[in-house]
Image (cartoon, rainbow, N blue to C red):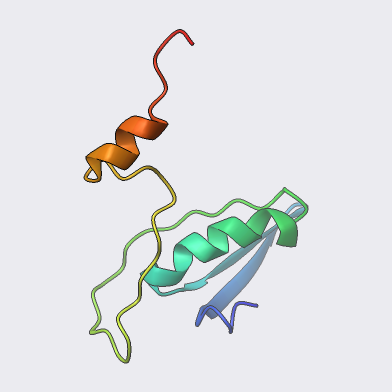
Length: 86
């Protein structure tokens, strides 16, 4: 699964009953990993990430569809906006 996300696992350390896996994953794939982590770890996994460096994009530029309402599309945004107290 990590290979499909183009992640490069690094060191693995046991801390009591917990396992710490360090590695690198492209920023464009972090969201996908966040979505899959609960199923992979039975809800016990925690993802902690930090930006490391910029690298040139190779191949097609990554894209991710919006998962929230688009405030720049005024008509769509107002149709889905809930009024407070309702």
